[in-house]
Image 1 (cartoon, helix red, strand yellow):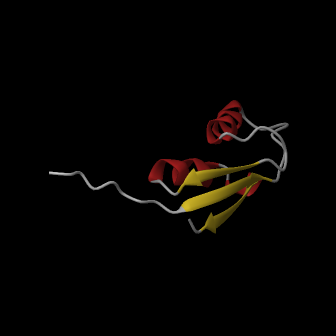
Image 2 (cartoon, rainbow, N blue to C red):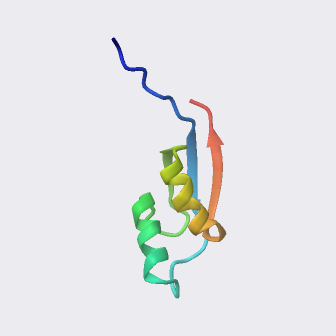
Amino acid sequence: MAVKKEEFKMLKIKLVKSIIGRTQKQRAIVKGLGLTKLQSEVLREDRPEIRGMINKIVFMLEVTEVKK
């Protein structure tokens, strides 16, 4: 029996506020999302784990849904 793989939407995540003066935990979340510099963008699957990370630092990000 074949296992059906879930398909997730994609999210474009952009860092719009600096990590200067932020807590170590917030910096780790930014790094975990794959963001490096101000105005950097990454594409990630719309998964619960990624949504949780986004919700922790939503004030620093700009998030848009992207169609595949």
